[in-house]
Amino acid sequence: MLKQEIEDGTRSFADPAFRADVIDGLTRRPRAIPARWFYDRRGSELFEAITDLPEYYPTRTEAALLKDKASEAAELVGAGRAVVEFGSGSSTKTPILLAAVAPSAYVPIDISGDFLRESSKALAAQFPDLAVLPLEGDFMRPLRLPAAIADAPKLGFFPGSTIGNMIPSSSADLLRAMRESLGEGAMLLIGMDRIKDADVLERAYDDAAGVTAAFNLNLLERINRELDGNIPVDAFRHRAVWNDDRARIEMHLEATRDVTFTIEERPFSMAAGETIHTENSHKYGPRDARILLRAGGWTPIAEWTDPADQFALYLAEAQAPRPAP
Image (cartoon, rainbow, N blue to C red; front, side):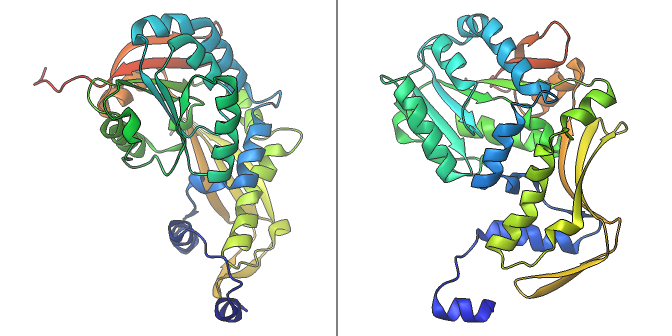
């Protein structure tokens, strides 16, 4: 079937990095696929639905915190910076920041191109005098930003506790890549979720309506759509568990029965109870967060948290390197 599709030109080719990560992830033990591949168009839509769920506290808590502290952040940042948002999604929190800091331009970056263009168009209509310069790309590595903001001072924006999706070493690498993209003297406003009761965390990632389950399972549907897979999606279930030793929620796709399937004609099999590890969401205490920022080349200069201490915003600066101590 795949050969015929290639020969007659009806095959749509997937991102080679997606293919490589899926094949490698299903071959290794334990099986794991990077969470960034959740975000095709359907995955992005499902994630936006997750942010409205009653169990999912991070979005509303961070939005309220940002509304409360945006003016303080703006005083520290100063007017006229170009705001660069990493993983912008629907940019729901962005208007709060843009209204406060009076930026010279806004550059949203996202891996989902269609979703990026739609949300950028909506935001440009909301701020008609602001230059909105969408950039489709993977912000996990340094990016060439638009030439129009090359000489502008920059403010990176990374809300949503997305930094927690990576293991700490990868998080530090990402922060270093952001520093390289933005340049010395840039600032970064970043959200980080706090460590809290395990029941609260598990409910946030396994909601009663099953939206997070659909988001997780959509990864298998994407593999079937884009990589000529025949994974029996109904043979898998969503699992979210708190790993206290690593201070993170883990999301898995668990086989509920023995399954065999192919991806681009490559055979795979899983026994009942085996899982594909699809996402981590690390939670950080105050000291942990500051150490992580410094490891990534950023100097924390301000910290804000909500009254219940569920979520934190950090403002950090890419200061010139200096000798120890």
